[in-house]
Image 1 (tube, rainbow over the protein chains, first blue to last red):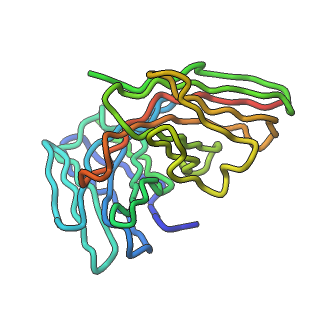
Image 2 (cartoon, rainbow over the protein chains, first blue to last red):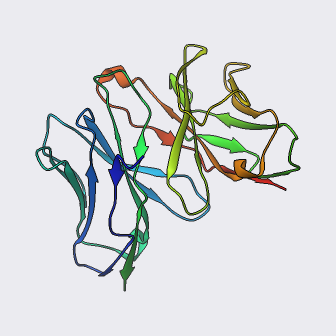
Length: 114
Length: 116
């Protein structure tokens, strides 16, 4: 079951620069996408979401872009801060089918270097 | 800020024993979920629960698993006869109402289950 993929297991970025985390999906029924941040020994923390009726959603330093034709979304963090260092998970679901379970990617470990 | 809580943080059990993992979802949320993450693997959906019944479950959620909302605040996952492969982090989550056009699920800190 690889419906949501994060092909980069890790990413290192200098403090103050932009972090771009990528996610691809295969299920065309997905219409709602979320990004979670996870520290070791903690649960995933919700960051930002986007509905398929939009192509961009912004919240402070975090922006999510959705390209439906490419079945691709990305999370931009700018400027990156050392506290952003964590594992980032992309998740997707299909609200239109009434399903409410999330399908997660395998995560990307972001390291922000001071 | 309201949060999902889970107890215990770590549960060690012998194979074949029953375990109950407990969760207190956010108080005004209507949907409750259990997910698990086996070490080194992705977070996987187990079950969702709404209006005192299971609304959706995955293939993982077989007859050894059950969920219950015994009172107005707790949401439990019972594993009847644990197997070695049940060792994982189990996360509880809750959300308001996906019918409102979003499904922002808020996760608890997890219970690490170790089956020996």
